[in-house]
Length: 207
Image (cartoon, rainbow, N blue to C red):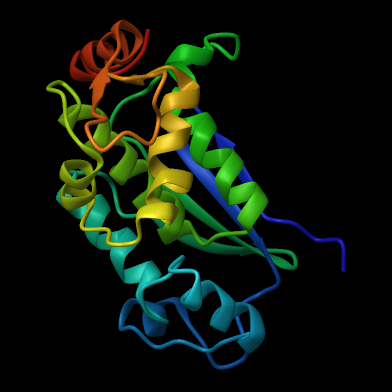
């Protein structure tokens, strides 16, 4: 009791620690093959119903697949005491100043979501990817339907809460009709802050 998920961002990597060791008989090699052993079936069922996970046993394989697709080094999974640490190495060193909230943007959003929800590593990476996809799409004015299609999400309320609202709160995108948030003609577009963030990302990272 009292243990929590921990997410740490470094210049060259992201580390996520989950409380508890691998279940007896389960190895990293098994996980890469999609083998899954559920520690808490109640929580697993709730996460499934909330659409926080697509299916059991897919998160680790997705993490390794995404890393390979991005040309990143293979992630590491190590047991540290009574915890399991997931290490995702970055392609380049990215120095981020803590006070630069507009630059930390998406990372801060996802870190908060993972902390609040106790979500898995795969969920965290997927949230970041979807937020980045929406931000890029908003270079042109888009409706919420257009943005949901980009991320292949179908639940509008969950999309607003997990993807759209955090980007609005961070100031990366804005409404075209801010005085009527629920207007059927509402669209979203990138702000100058969002453009600055993407420009620095395209240059290979934040200085």
